[in-house]
Length: 61
Image (tube, rainbow, N blue to C red):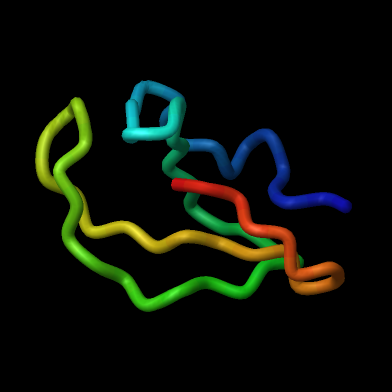
């Protein structure tokens, strides 16, 4: 399932506790959790976990 168009990826330079994290300008086919402040390796960011809108699988941020 398509998450985003390549041009919607703003940055791949983020590092979360479970691995890489991405910054998108637009995503589709996902349901997001409540946004919260998290300390990533790159500093404090307001982030949300996303879940597949079809199967519910969690993609860690």
